[in-house]
Amino acid sequence: MAEKGPVTVAAAAMRVVHDKGRNLKRYLEFLEEAAEKGARLVVFPEQSLQGYLYSLDHQFTPEELEYHHRNAEPVPGESTQLLTEQAREKGMYIVFGMTEVGPANHVPTLFNSAVMVGPEGLAAVYRKVHLPGDERNIFRPGRSWEVVSTPLGRVGLLICWDQAFPESTRELTLAGAQILVMPTARGKTTSYFYDLFSRTRALENRRWFIASNQVGLCDQGETDYYGHSLIVDPRGHIVAETGDEAEGLAVATIAVAEEIEKEAQSLFYLPRWRVPGMYRRIGEEG
Image 1 (tube, rainbow, N blue to C red):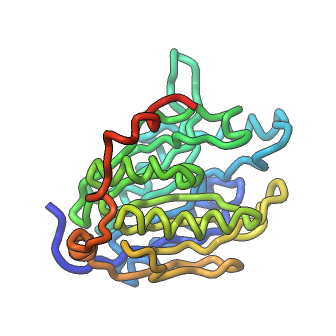
Image 2: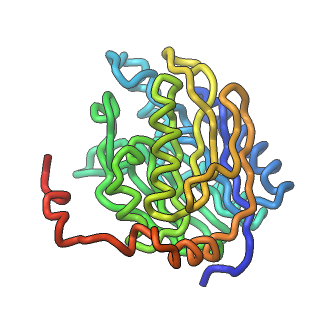
């Protein structure tokens, strides 16, 4: 049962490096700041534990491939345990992006994953479904959507490029999600996608939308990350946002269920006006 009343949430804009120890140290610093601000849910960017691919359109070097495989972790694993202890100590839920290693036919397989931990322990692992560019050459796609019931509300997980497909957030909404949470690694060259889709996905589903993005020039490759971690209300209004140059936390106190219930009474509550019988081709392969 979700708690009634407002809850404080936070999304980090983080400079991520290809050094797991340094990224974990930065996580802990952000978590201290978030706890001081009363945050009960904190979101970190896509693959912010180990670092993202050096590029989305490049030739993998043996050194890069070795880095990703060597630093990948299972879930649960060492970093998951550390962040679970932080969640328990601070009474909060934490979502972070990572490179996960998992067995598939007895062969180590990498996934681009979002992990959620809370005071109760490991809450969910979501493996990115939509893989763009060179992600297809190193990661296996996920095959399910994750919605987690918490005292703060029901949280639905997606990652970066999933945002471009309206079916992703509609699937999560129909599964009961009230807060759509997206770790991302969005560069400045496609920043208009990020801004437009974040507000649209919130508005068309009348759900809260929280996005946490990397920020700044990558230490490997040439990607300059956009930042602008943000929190969007169910009407598509940005209620908190970081800038595009510096690290920081977007923090807002939101009334999760109350705002959605109010939107559900609106004439323009889109989920109510769906006509599923007319959407026959959506589930077909392209």
